[in-house]
Image (tube, rainbow, N blue to C red; front, top):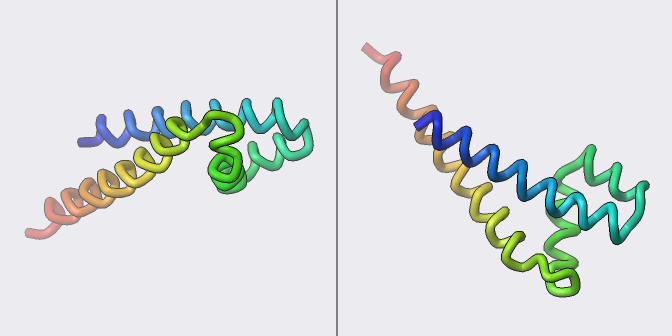
Length: 86
């Protein structure tokens, strides 16, 4: 289970970087640095520009992997708590 959470985190990072590159290319260094510091900005910007820049599949995948990562993290936490209870 932990391996799946780590895999989801790695995919999340890769998708973030791909949108961040588009952000730097289209909006310049200032907003690119903002996107680097605040990934939420990158995520929102990606959804705002997804049709214009052809990022629809990337943004859908990024959204899905965020949900998957949260679900897996919650399951992992539940499993850890269940093991701690005698």
